[in-house]
Amino acid sequence: MSSLSSSEGLRLAAFCGVLIVMLVWELLLPRRTSNIKRTARWPSNLAVVVLDTVLVRLVFPTTTIAVALLTETNGWGLFNVLRLPQWLTLPAGIILLDLAIYLQHVLFHWLPALWRFHRMHHADLEFDVTTGVRFHPVEILLSMAIKLGVILALGTPALAVLGFEILLSATSLFNHGNVKLPERLDRALRWVLVTPDMHRVHHSIVTRETNSNFGFNLPWWDWLFKTYRDQPAAGHLAMTIGLEQFRELTEQRLDRMLTQPFRTGGHDPGQRQAVE
Image (cartoon, rainbow, N blue to C red):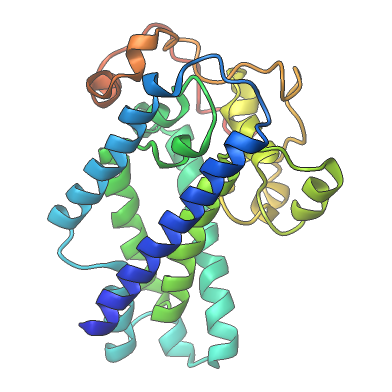
């Protein structure tokens, strides 16, 4: 129990640390000029992450770390059957969990019922670190269920799960940051990490750009499955963020965000063309 408590504390500390770093970075070196005041978006974006956290704790009585420990104890899952050495299972566990998140992300774009919940993330009219925590509670619950299922199937080591959870929360904050990186550094990082410029393309109002660059941590899956798009057609400074059908500022209110999946909101572009 103490190990679970310490792992949760470590994840929270990492999340808060990266969040503070990104907030300062955005203030000092922003990539784009924001046209909407933070007070119109941040309260709702931050409130949703609190709501998501509470709901996950209520709906799922166990954590991903606890499930991973259970698989180790009972010898469940692929890794425990194969009995591979730890030096191999740890990186392999992280990489396979990242692949699962990539495939899940594509699925949430491809299936209309799932897209209705995921589109709340894309309906943010600006792109900054708080966009990285703006997910509908139903999507978060479904994502947690999928993650637990993958961990059970793979028998992912608890240490790999902890590393992945920390990495996922940190990179989600980083690659949603409205921060400026030197072009050469951005190019170098893209070999191993999804950068803000790479992921920003995914938040374009242009559907073919929305349906690209699905990765959160590793960029390899977008290359492998041919969903990688190098740059937005309009350029990073001129591109429009968000969705065509949710342009009113009132849609950034928490109540409107939470009810958005149950409203048509005008024309909804065909998200099933996720891979062109």
